Length: 69
Image (cartoon, rainbow, N blue to C red; front, side, top):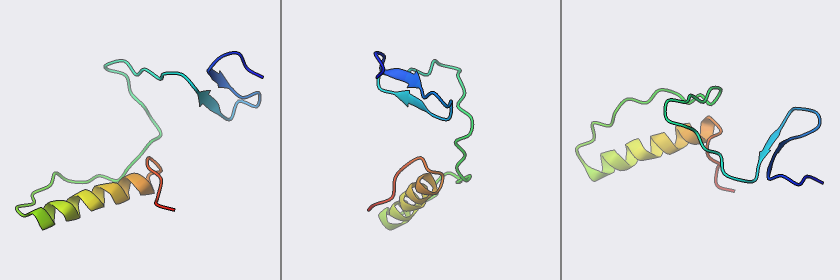
């Protein structure tokens, strides 16, 4: 049992964050790649919805957001 909220498992393959993870300004997170999406040029609500859904799909594909179960 651990007495801290944040710890690495004993095999070193996983880091558990049970407390707050603070990423300072200027810091960089690597390894979380998502495909490039250009800025939206939508001129209608339907176009904006399509662009937003494309963004959600890219986040899911990159593993940054869970898919609906």
